Image (spheres, rainbow, N blue to C red):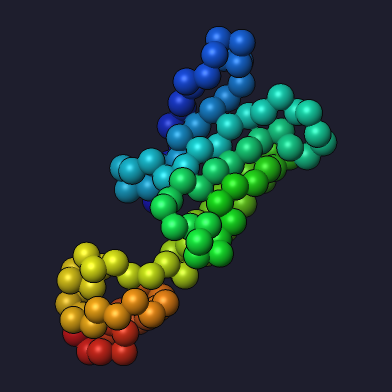
Length: 119
């Protein structure tokens, strides 16, 4: 479940702008922050801060005209990451799968299988 936690670390001149830490299962995975709107449609910036997201071909940052637009784009990017990420060794051990190759596979192929192997 995603939650927003208010987060302001910028200089006092930007204290009036809203800034949120995006949390998933108690871990910070990104930020959504209000910008001084220099260009139309770029009032809110969002950043997916997960190692490897960009290399996996997932958009790791963007802009929205509203907070809701930024949250929607952030969620879409995060869901793309969850669909394309390569399972880690910890994922494989936790899932009961002994396959340890590095081929790109969805993190969860089916509830009762891991890389096509029955648990």
